[in-house]
Image 1 (tube, each protein chain N blue to C red):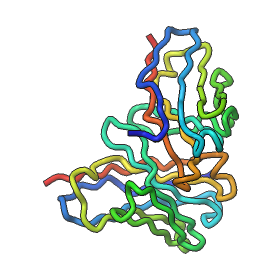
Image 2 (tube, each protein chain N blue to C red):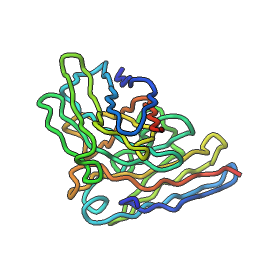
Image 3 (tube, rainbow over the protein chains, first blue to last red):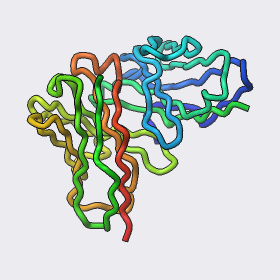
Length: 110
Length: 122
């Protein structure tokens, strides 16, 4: 059971906008920044969004993040087939003194 | 360019010991935390623990405390994850990941190794 809660799956057609949600608690999302990772099969996760809504260099602006209270979301606009991947939310947890992850959302581009 | 290069895949028997490694380059090794993350087959990411290579201060997730040991050798910019007695349930992909010590609460895990697949089977 992951500390952060994500829906198992999401889907959309090319060009659509898809949102992935992540729910936590006061000790993690409620008090700290949320980060999002993208993982393709057989590869290491890659930092996609950091500090709630910041994109590392090279990440398209189709990807955006937001946070409110103890929840966060990742939005992908102009969905493309190459966006099909697993997406994980994460945050620092004050109680754990370490990172906590969501269970991951598998995004399918129909 | 920050790079983390992990040791190769391992196949072990239950009860055997194992140490896998993660070598950092392209940055000041002692200025970054090294974290270890487990991903069991078909499952999500689990934070195991981390080490400050400058003084070997460690912090473990309660889920992994006592079952694994994280260490580092700053002289060769390498961190380790080790088991004294493997179990079949330790079969997983293990990733190391690093972040500047002063920014870990904000940036998360910025740079990742390629992963080390550990298979434990009799």
